[in-house]
Image (cartoon, rainbow, N blue to C red):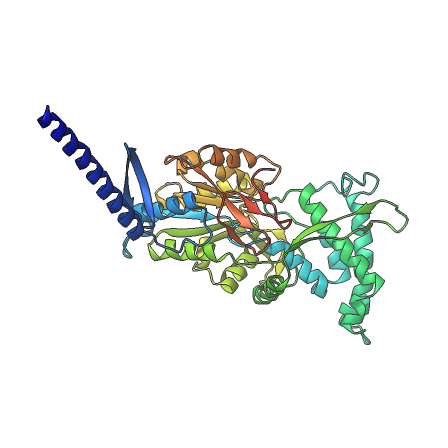
Length: 439
């Protein structure tokens, strides 16, 4: 009996001593390995292995940060690995690689600076070109005003501005600051914002066809590059906010129109660090964007993305015989938006990599929907959370449903709308200081 009591006492003491020391070892291990991946739980012990990290944690959502490091750890290659044997990733650009939209800002900057290189006749014909039904209303809210009617209003304003300021034959120009304050310029500025917004929402680009919502005609490649960089600098200095103009479309109308604009460009530093990490470990990075190619090329150079020009796929513009831009899509080019993005992936990128899909895709909107659908085949698909009221919500909900699942495919990355940087959550921090997960 005494022997049994002594053995029992010894056993309890041993278990306590063992548990105390295991907990001490665990704490020391976790202190030394702050970046650790949970492998499995076994009783009260949790087995972990240290996770190698290849770029700063920054504001990445935790589970996505782990997955991205795992991808680099799994697919990194040596510098002499041929291109076709390397893994690759694909990024959208606007609202993914950059905060907000570079085409929106460039168009607005051109309008604000009256930086057009079209005569009055060229401007008018450019806005009416293409296989579009211009008899459709400019907006569902204004059923009595056709797109053609609105174009005529816009070209009337432009003709007057061209005569007063832009024409080479104008002998006496007003100061530009005075011109900008004139009712004529203010009306033209408002009408341009309406036209650009409404036309992009109502009509669809076609390869080889005119696109009236482009205004780059007359620019050489070099001059458009310079203009875009000026617009990027201007946009980067704007405060982050959502702006809208309210005015009647017609002087006689009592119904107002409010073209909205998400203002301010920012480079998310965490995205840049990820680009650099992929590049440093010989994982190819491509941009597949719905913005015009010259604008994306200028932005990549301006913000310092480590990307070669031939790794940028975007909307190609037709050029004339003197290498000047035309307001039309290039013949035979891909319309790199929606299903056109998948076509570009299938026909331009996959052949470079033995028909393999990218190991990850990063997007934010319906323009990326067709590539986000490939998530189960790619194994990693990242949606930047703009909590849009569209079909991308299905991917957001799947990311939330499978959160912390080691086999998760979809990841939701929050954005900080007050800084233009990432937000370390699946939710985004809005301008209203509210966290937004779903619509």
